[in-house]
Amino acid sequence: MRRNMRRILDLDEGLEVIGEVSDGEEAVRWVRQKHPDLVIMDLELPVLDGIKATQIITAEHPEVGVIVVSDEGDLELLRAAMVAGARNFLVKPYTTVELMTAIYQLIQRRPPAGGTKGTVLALYSPHGGQGRTTLAANLGVALAQDQAQVVAVDLNLQFGSLDLFLDLEPENTWQEMVWDLSELTPAQLDRYLTPHASGLKVLCAPRQPRWEEPIPAAEVQQVLALLRDPFQYILLDLSSGLDEVVLTALEEANLVMLLATQEVPSLRHISLFLDMLEEMEYPLEKVRLILNRYNDREEPRRQEIEKALKREIVWCLPDQRPIVGAAINQGQPVVLMAPKSPIARSIVGLARHLQGLGEALPSGTPETPRPRWLRPPTSSPKP
View 1 (cartoon, rainbow, N blue to C red):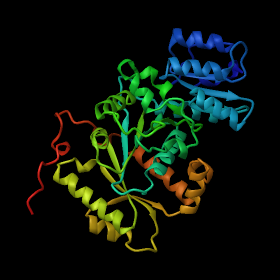
View 2 (spheres, one colour; view 1 turned 30 degrees about the vertical axis):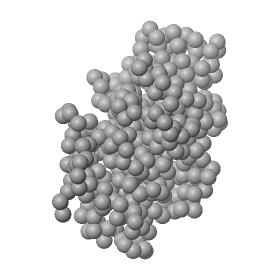
View 3 (cartoon, rainbow, N blue to C red; view 1 turned 90 degrees about the horizontal axis):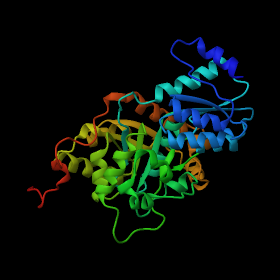
């Protein structure tokens, strides 16, 4: 199998095969010595199986992309491989096209050498119940399915529920990460992140609400800085308030996805929030307005909302509450449970739209000290 694979890869001038090994233990040693960009790992290996070898390699070398191959297309095996850190999965017999596609998907998703920092995408709405957590979970899975390196961060630090939406049981959460923050390096991040079968990783909210000694905004900023190195996309699921954590997240974000629905209270709160951002000189070019649960047969319609808010709506997610509700109750992202549904297709389209923005996204943290928008006026403005 290795000979055949090497014969295929040698035909591509853009790739160089720098070694072969015959068991999992040898693979781990070899990666430590040679530091390859990519590893193609069979799951049925002697001495140390492919799942365990993949787990060790990705924990020690998160920059190395692992593609696993197996005789079985079993869903549990796929889940185990992705949890171990694999970026792609091929079932034997696979075609030359399938092999090369898997390799080049990984190459294209790798950050350029020298370090392009990850893109921070903040999901926010000043009005509760707008679908932020649903979108964070599904958008994260959709991006991960496109072979992007994605982490979803639950920043509703008192009552976060991103773990429930993805049916996860976190071993560690924000709380444990903050306790160890002073000695934490990017290479150690994985122990605090909970993996999803799709390849998405999640930093879950603390298990119990914290009424005293809330997690300081400065520590949130430090964690986000660490996450920018290994991940291409950092999705922030924010609470509806405007506390220091939310303000810090908005400051750090490259893009703020502002969620609204057609309901009048939601639109009123969006209008007030946009006015506040403008008054505080927040860079509004970072804000994208998204209309959730949209029904074009109901009033007000998209054009009327855009006119009232004086702002373009960049994406409309269709109203499919029965499907979405069933997915939430089962802890399954709708993009996996009902991939052909209009809502799933729309979320996947939004994920690809965001990936297409590329360098057009505004930068995150400004170079200037504490911008004016983070220093609210001490008194109400004159009428």
